Image 1 (cartoon, rainbow, N blue to C red):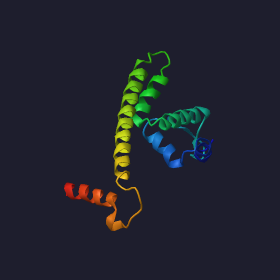
Image 2: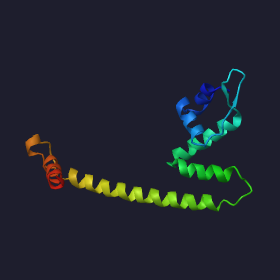
Image 3: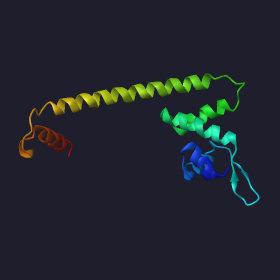
Image 4: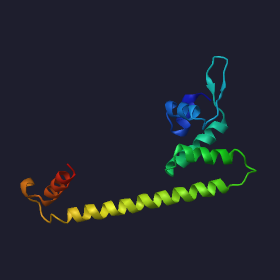
Length: 135
């Protein structure tokens, strides 16, 4: 299949597919007599794997690690376990940061119980004080 067909089946843009090729995550396809890239089912499956990893918020280096292990099915998957443990810890840190952000926003929202004029808005005043302190 040509790159446009592969893009249509995977949801990736042509540019993204070329990026993954250039990054070494997707093997170079064969070329047709007209010098078009000719992709196979293995390219489709690999891009689907990459898409699933990206949906789990994995970066290119993490995906590279997973693909390297996947490409050698007889080797241990200890590197996969270790990488996923690190990723889980990072997600936990981000969740904690988002919870702290939520608490700050709730506290900020609690400053104003009713709609007022902008001049009297406690939220705007508080945000202005924080901005003044940082300046």
